[in-house]
Image 1 (cartoon, rainbow, N blue to C red):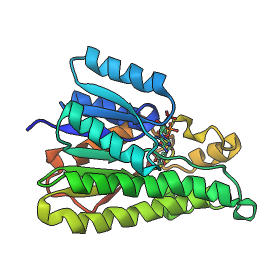
Image 2 (cartoon, rainbow, N blue to C red):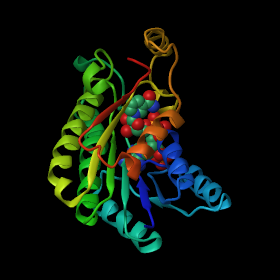
Image 3 (cartoon, rainbow, N blue to C red):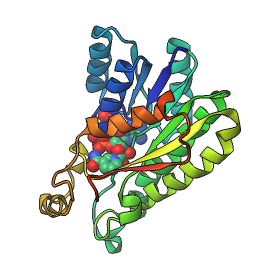
Amino acid sequence: MKRVVLVTGGGRGIGAAIALQAARDGAAVGINYRSNAATADALAARITAEGGRALAVQADTSQEADVLRLFDTVERQLGPLTGLANNAGITGRPGPIAQLTVEGLNEVLATNVVGYFLCAREAARRLQRGGAIVNVSSRLATLSGAGELVPYSATKAAIDVLTVGLSRELADRGVRVNGVRPGVIATEIHRQRDPDVLRNIERGIPLGRIGTPEEVAECVCWLLSDKASYVTGALLDVGGGR
Ligand SMILES: NC(=O)c1ccc[n+]([C@@H]2O[C@H](COP(=O)([O-])OP(=O)(O)OC[C@H]3O[C@@H](n4cnc5c(N)ncnc54)[C@H](OP(=O)(O)O)[C@@H]3O)[C@@H](O)[C@H]2O)c1
């Protein structure tokens, strides 16, 4: 069966690694981005040059109209969806809860919760028989991110509930829904964080290093594939033991 996988936030970081790996696994890939067209277009061109099929589509996943247009465009150009990597996320501005602003809170909720739910809903509507959804969560869903990233961590805990709940709702249609919870992975998402805090965290990782986007993509693509045919409602930690 022809596979069509949509990766939200697929232009950079973990999403780009997922898109590349999914294409190498044989899927046509929809690469969503919000504002950075150049990296998403370059990735689509790279996949095409390797003999795959890819399409970069701009959409803000926190906006319902954008999400509808995104899914419609991918299905019209690449074919019926078979998989979603729900990945587009932001940390929000790091800091203690005492310094939280409503604007800051709403921003992180909009992308990380509303965006994930809207994309999960569209996938649930379109995947009628078989297919897979993988929600990219975070180890912080249980570690809490105290002192700097509690709102972000709370959004990831919400996504873990979405993963388990949706897996139950869609199981009778053979649609599998799983979560991957990365630890610290080398991407630009950390650019606003204190380097000393990151160095301290790295020292506490049992495997002794931060992870790569490719190491997360490997797990996401396995869960998207038929090789994970009996796995649903699972939350896979990819954090080097932390
Ligand atoms: N890196 C880590 O250590 C880590 C750890 C745990 C979990 N995660 C999770 O992994 C996912 C990817 O993180 P990353 O580190 O790869 O981040 P990243 O390098 O900052 O890339 C984020 C991607 O998401 C896109 N994006 C952000 N907000 C969006 C929106 N509202 N609509 C559409 N696209 C949007 C960005 O688009 P533009 O390129 O257009 O800006 C970009 O492609 C996130 O959900 C993150 O929470 C990351």
